[in-house]
Amino acid sequence: MTARVRAPELRGRGWLNTGGKDLTLADVRGKIVLLDFWTFCCINCLHVIDELRPLEEKYGDALVVIGVHSPKFEHERDPVALAAAVERYGVHHPVVDDRDMHLWQQYAAKAWPTLAVIDPTGYLVASMAGEGHAEGLSRLIDELIAKHTADGTLHRGDGPYVPPAEPHTLLRFPGKAVELPSGNLLVSDSSRHSIAELTADGETLVRRYGSGERGEPFNEPQGLLLLPAAVAERVGYEVLVADTVNHQLRGLDLTTGDVTLVAGSGRPWRTAIEGPQPALDADLSSPWDLAWFDGKVIIAMAGIHELWWFDPTAGTVGVYAGTTVESLRDGPIPDVWMAQPSGLSVGGDRLWIADSETSALRYVEAGVMHTAVGQGLFDFGHVDGPAKEALLQHPLGVAALPDGSVLVADTYNGAVRRYDPSSDEVSTVDSGLAEPSDIVVTGTGHVIVVESAAHRLTRLAPGVVKTVTGERHKTERPPSPVAPGPLTLDVIFTPAPGQKLDTQFGPSTRLEVSASPPELLLEGAGVTTDLSRSLVVNPAVRKGILQVVAQAATCDVDVEFAACHLTRQDWGVPVVVTDDGPSRLPLILRGLDES
Image (tube, rainbow, N blue to C red; front, side, top):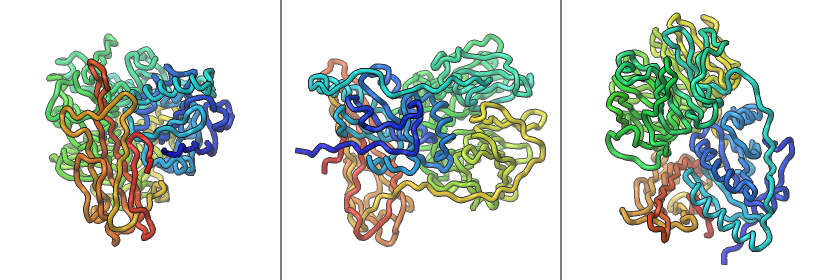
């Protein structure tokens, strides 16, 4: 019989959405508690927030969701920035600030996002990593409600959530902007779920497209693209909108205000499909920005770390670059690695990319991807100078300039940076900005910054250049100790209640393992269909990252028309090699480690 595990107490630097109260497990005793370990830079974490909304609505009197914010980037440790993110993404449940990763370690989390379920008596009953768990969670909650209603230990009623005051500003967390032929500015007013046309000075609202309600039709829209005139005439709309949380693209007719769905089934991407596919049938994943390059639309598909192409005339889409692996690797496209590409701009023959999770500025030229600035998933900071030494921090926007240089919205550094390819140098143009998310260079040469967390557009003074002596940072995620030599990697997966592994189309599981540096592993890298793998760790390499991608296919049991489900997670596990380290590394995809 497996021993039951008491849930560790909830402790953090502070709480949001509780009316100023610090919660304890005693305050939610009698409820089913779902802990959501997240960090606000992480697109997969944002997917989970949206997946949990229907569960919060359905089980509101029995379920309490608590967000545990365990930060990756230095900027995410700022309590003001965290409060802004909670509002920006419509988080309607309590959030504890796990600044020092205490709860992360107590609950043995190893990936963003991770979910943990606590029963009404305070015992940990399930843990799962990644997104796509809503159906399984619903079944588990139903079981827990039935059991604890029968036992008399479930206490229905209001939860501890206290909504904040409603803000009043012209824009609310704007995302991206473009200049219209009239000189006015079109802005994705993301937290207002609409597209706003403003006067050229960015101060006055001319018109708003969309109802302003989530999903009608927009849901946290981001990227905007003014199509070439000939293309716009053929397709019947001038502007393409990346409707991010709906996982769709929509066409906007500026004259009539008509909004047309042009790409995306509305289902989040779960598995790859080879070759072009009809745009309206395709499952997209958080399209974040758009650009016209090489005769087609390029989509920054942030949710799966890829770039896609879209042909608006033919109505087809496909993969342009990336493999869904979240990391940094250059080379001929599409076989490259990215991490949440979030900003696009075209300059000459180059497509510039703000690759946010690697804090990198990258570009595609002649079918090959290059990295101009950036060193990897866990290295970031605010450092100017030679590009190979310079650092950014989670940039979301980029704008190519006529002279060949590039401006970068260095979001978490609150700065606009400039990269000059001719000198291979990085400088700071301006700083002290509130999470700049995009940059517009107007036809008259003015530079306008979307200052997202200040809810405004800001015009930069011409010729401004600041010298900033910044700091280098590395993510302080606690590494997992491992022994040199033989190491057993176990990915734990237990199907949700009412589901079984689906083998009707072949193996139901898949495991891909790689390492950075590659020399960390002497044996065990590659792809297999078993969720357990024997690795051999190089004793000469004392630390590194194990990149693990696992997936499991399940289907409903004893249902005439059984639904199928795919659970997938990508871990980048920092490890430190020590002689007294364990020879087993467990990672939980879904379930509990009972070894």
